[in-house]
Image 1 (cartoon, rainbow, N blue to C red):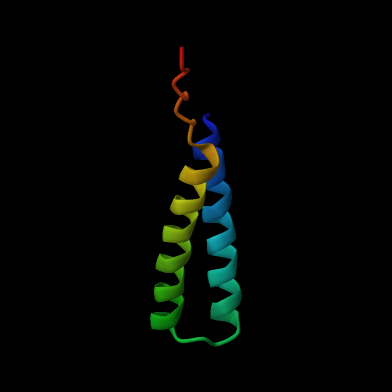
Image 2 (cartoon, helix red, strand yellow; image 1 turned 30 degrees about the vertical axis):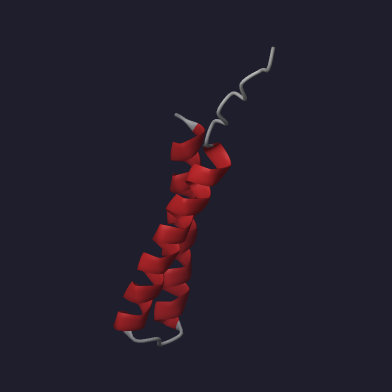
Amino acid sequence: MSSLSVYLLGFLVLTAGLAMVAHLAGIPAAWIGAGGIVMLGLGILLAVTKTRRRDASPTEY
């Protein structure tokens, strides 16, 4: 399993946990859905930036 997959899976579990807590706190479902979408987008963004391979810098001769 790649680092990206593990990162996204962990962020998905975190988002699901936060959504469950929000549901138990009585927050409306529309707000939970909107927050979940934002969290998943943030997770994808962070996963890509943390696991991206850097381009090799060209060497000057």
